[in-house]
Image (cartoon, rainbow, N blue to C red; front, side, top):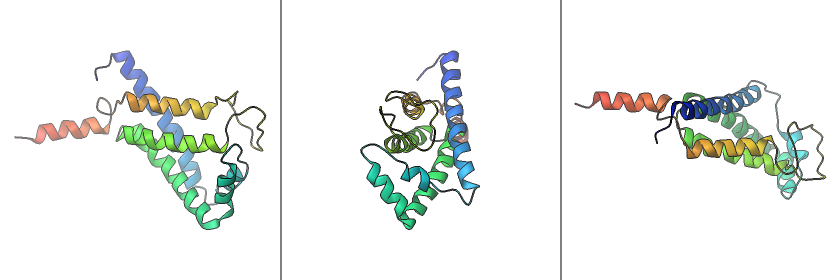
Length: 160
């Protein structure tokens, strides 16, 4: 795909800030040995509430969930920041965000223990970030600005 300079800058900037958000959230969890998603899961609402509560109530499942959540956020963020496999990272990020949304949907009348910033009628910041990742999946930039470009450039230079 050929992008104008403004389009490329906008898409790369979006990729970087979402990447930073994921990376930061992941590292906060990875570096805090006491962190767990238990309270968040127990506070779930919506149609899938019971599934999230069951996850929270089983220590082995919760430990696995916490591990994959923290490291998943970290690696998704790193991939987006570096421009390495950003389409796969976008899909993985969308899956995580959809799980977060299903756990705490922004439906009218739903109240949660944890205050949510940017939660409105049905649409909240989680859903907006989901669609921003969908945009990045649809219009990838790592082949223009990122590690993928460097790898591709080096491969073409090595050929005789």
